[in-house]
Structures are given as structure tokens and as C-alpha cells.
Image (cartoon, helix red, strand yellow):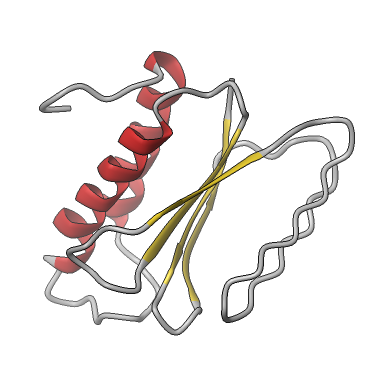
Length: 126
């Protein structure tokens, strides 16, 4: 099972963060526009697109592209929101709606993706 990519899209529809965790062998076409229309082409494989939007930050969308057999995507989206809140929003040098450039955000996101791929879910306090 795999988590392929994580995207964070601001309320204006702009891509403010992209992380490719696992790049499949097939060609993937990524097109973003507002309202968010997602065009994905993968040959001989299936892909699940999960959209998550937390109520605390209206308009920010967290998108996870994952293998259909990957479990715990909703919990992963909550964890990504928590990481975003802790390491991007609390960063005094980060401005809302701007691209996320924070080393701690990157490190914690990578760690969360590794845990999600191995365990499949997040328990309380993880």
C-alpha cells in the first residue's frame, strides 16, 4: 500500500504545498484550477483521491493521493491538519495563503506518511 502525494490548496485554488511521497512508474497528469478540477490519468493502476477540509481553516484543502487499499486516510488528513496548525500556522514567518516553506512541517509530514503507510491508522496522541 502506498500514499503517493499530498497537496495543500488555499481558498483561492492556489497550490501552496506539494509533496510527492512515492512516484508510480506510470505517467501522472496533474492539473489544478479553480474550482478545483482534478485530472488524473494512471494506466493499469487505480488511485484514490481523498479531499479533506477542516472547519478551523475555511477554504484550505488537504488532498491525499493514495492506493485504494490504504486504510486510515481520514485519520491521516486530520494528522496533516494538525501538523499544518502546529508547524505552519504557528510559525511567525508564515503568511496565510502563501506557499508553505517550513522544515519542521516537511519533517513531521514525512514522519506521518511513514507511520500511515506502515500502520494504516493514527491512534490518539500520535
